[in-house]
Length: 134
Figure (cartoon, one colour):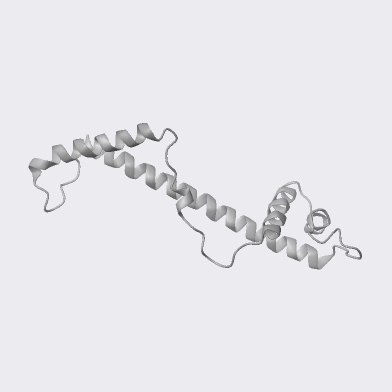
């Protein structure tokens, strides 16, 4: 082992414990062919829930913004009120779409970071445990 054994564990038991953990990890790896992801276990509880329409507008705005459109042009394409009689997509709609776009980008960045941290930390911990057990 590369690290000293935790206090309280007799050194005579370490090889048996290492073998036990190694067999457990290998059995879990064989049983779950796609590795288990911890991504679904974390719950985003920050802030108020996001409306489906705002999420859609933000996602579409991000896609169209990458194509080089202005928020006014994007608002005329994705505004949730554009089908209502008498509605004209002007600055208030463009502002709402811009805010939805910014919120969407922040959420996506947070999700990406959480996914990377979760997968890298879980993977590193398992690999570290297996390495230490061998």
